Image (cartoon, rainbow, N blue to C red; front, side, top):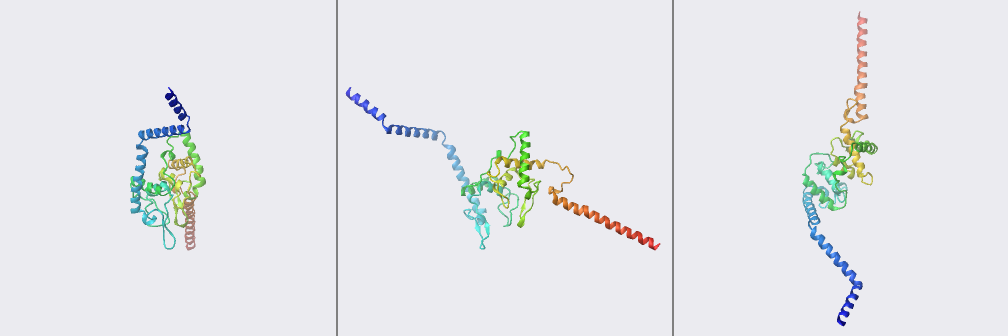
Length: 290
């Protein structure tokens, strides 16, 4: 009995020990972590492995097609005169790569003021791999999800409201370069604002997010994802609008309208005046001869 009492006393003292709670906590954490790892071991590990493979494949493509201008590690290359031959890609993010490569602007055919859209060189899978590699160089804007640029889930009233808001944003921030109708126009130093009539929604979103070329960058702090979506909704609504005034003249506004007025309007009046003057002179000569 005395031995039993002593053993019970020792157990009671151990239970009240400060270390007992810590030991139980560690056992609980290890048990929970083990169960979690046993239940879901493949998800995170598989994603990490897949991303590592994409980055490695993207690096191979980068070294073959991009390192000549951007450097072997995306650090950029400058000429002897200090000019920027190929800018640094550290921190530009996957969104910039997806926009530039999928629209065919990169790789450049030859260095110039601004890359022009052309048929893409890389497949969709290769674009993803290049984007993954460049994204690994430094934090930058990620590729947007489809839900961020589409209005498919909105009701008709919500869509009309989005178009109205997008029109106000576009007319305030974008018409100076892209024209009120999104038809584009000339820019200083040999650049130009492209026509947005056939540009895909994801590329418009990525252009606003990353600011390619001479375009300003509209981060989510400047324009929220919803506001970018509204701008895209407005641009898409322009494609469905008929030309109520007759000839749209390219949708270039005062430029094409002024040219039309001068060449056909005033030019026609001048020609008609010359014809009247010539006809009057011939009539007077005939009267004098008679």
